[in-house]
Image 1 (cartoon, rainbow, N blue to C red):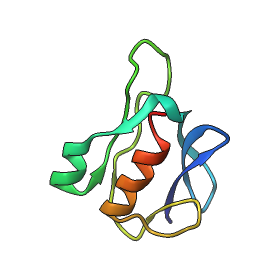
Image 2 (image 1 turned 180 degrees about the vertical axis):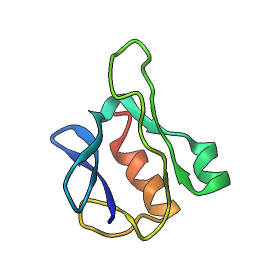
Image 3 (image 1 turned 120 degrees about the horizontal axis):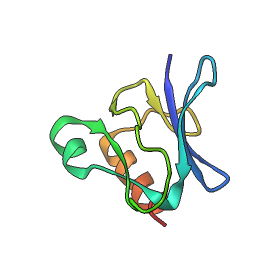
Length: 91
């Protein structure tokens, strides 16, 4: 099983690639990641950046590994996740 994290129609969506079950979904403009958690523990921890909006609040944290993939099924690395987040999230 892999976890896919991608942008679909303006939303950040995290889902299981086997059963396509959505694990988390929020408008991409309202989500970023915990930089410290990624840099210190190699874990993607998504956070709501606008606490005034009612959006996904309990994202599953995901360790960077071959099982965490992008929309093209390519495994994220720390560098590729940061590039994705900087260009796609919080905007």
